[in-house]
Length: 285
Image (cartoon, rainbow, N blue to C red; front, side):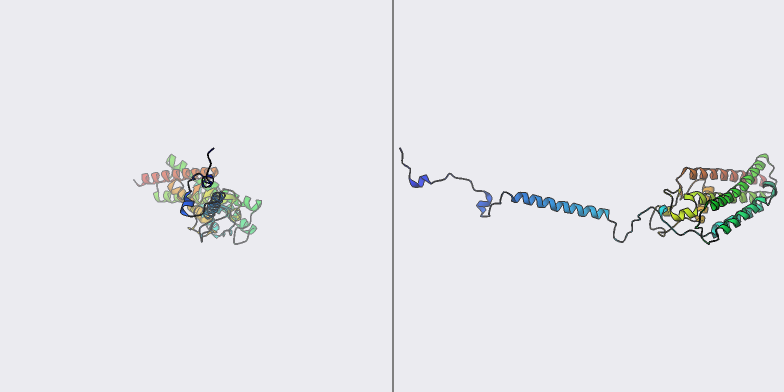
């Protein structure tokens, strides 16, 4: 038996030193790596939450509306503009030759004035902030009377132009055609004004879910006051541009009735203008 020396009995096998041990730094405990990874994930989660909040929040000093423009409650519009334009339509109807109007010549213009006075008596306030079935019925009856009178005159004029019985005075013909064309613009402006989102009183309350006519001020912020609401003169402008361009310009029809109404107005305007101008030019030649 070979005897072992005490020094050789206690000798341990060679074990390679770790880099941390070799450099003199203390070796990391087994749980330290997991703790660092958990802390890193926590920090990344915090950064993501801050980024999401920054994207969702509005920019400093900007206001994000809580509801669309057509759902905001606004102050009701004044009645002076629509009343003045209705009086202009009555005057234009009285200007037409009696042969182009429903007899007696004064009947429908007088009825329109009576309906206008009835509307003022039923709602004497300066602003159109009241709505009821009676007010709605009288208001629509007034617009229907203006449309009926002007439609009758337009049909009679077209018949005369087609049969060559419109006379030989080009100036009078242009004046008659211009009066019918202008009254047609007023009549369709009243229809747009009465039907868009239920009428002026309903628009002020913001009761409609969707608009029938989309104005530029309702699409983009910063180009009009925050409480902007279309008034009758805006609808008159829509009717005028549709009658001259034979198509919508800056205000888009969204509902089917608005599209069909614009189509009808363009057709009537185009027919009147073409026939009247063609006949007048023929007379002058």
